Image (cartoon, rainbow, N blue to C red; front, side, top):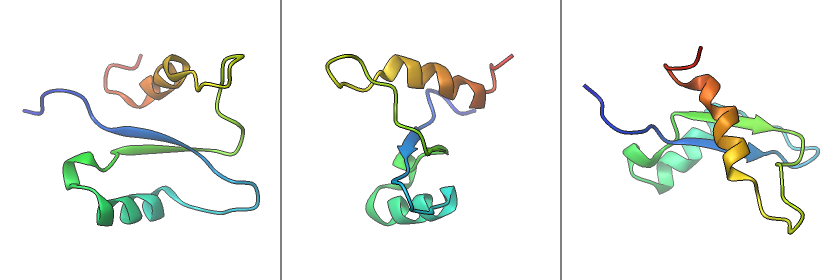
Length: 73
């Protein structure tokens, strides 16, 4: 039985760049321990949500990533 949370990532893709989830996992896999490699990587071509101070709204991203969980309805 697996306990705890799974690692996920939201990546903002630079304009004009083309990258796949598999390519990112392979690259990150070379740099991090296997348990730290994201299970799901969501690629976004639009800017990440930010507050008026320019900080990324992590709670919004967390809610968006819930669609990939087993508990998603």
